[in-house]
Length: 283
Image (cartoon, rainbow, N blue to C red; front, side, top):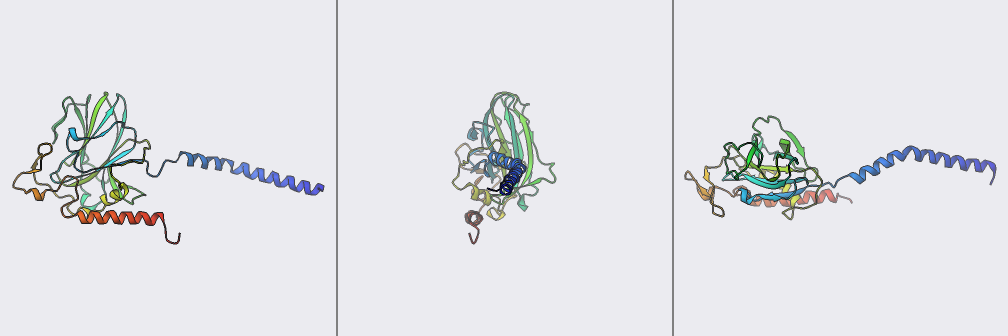
């Protein structure tokens, strides 16, 4: 090998090493980002179908750290939705409350309460508070222009009405309760926790249901005021008051009256949209 050729080879190697040294920090940063990126859906998804309207029927969670979201429709009769969890003194609970960005819900402002030991004495609430529990109440009536949240997986949009980080004063069992102060038919969601969690749900098609939950035409009577009703005995049928008929009061989290075909169509449409995003034309 000639001297000139050796010099040319050495110069080429030196140039390559220089280029690698310049992009090495970028490669390292990209590797770190990919390693630390959480899954696109790092939240457990649950749906309330009217089965969690009392403390003894609360949807139970054993840990407040995993990220979870519960979707519920407070139907007619308007009933609260109850969540229950165990917490230790000093635990920090991140909680959010929102409603789908649907025109009929633009002015709806549901309330949220944390019930449990060590909290102030409970004020008058439209439901029975468990013995020994105090309460912190979070009203959203003063929220004028809520932030808009978007879900890239389902294209669903929501209004965020409340976000709080709450320190638990004592160890024990606590409840989160959401309700409509005006007793109207409202769809809402409660999110708790912030750590990435497993891909689990209490339904087989959670993303399709999330998309349908945010479609106005799956519940045409959202925002309607419910007739005053007595909360029936546990396991009993609704007991309308003031002359309202049982037929006029839909189940708490079931589709709005006459909207079952629309909900089924919305589920199919949402599934088709997701399929198109996964398999774009020409692939």
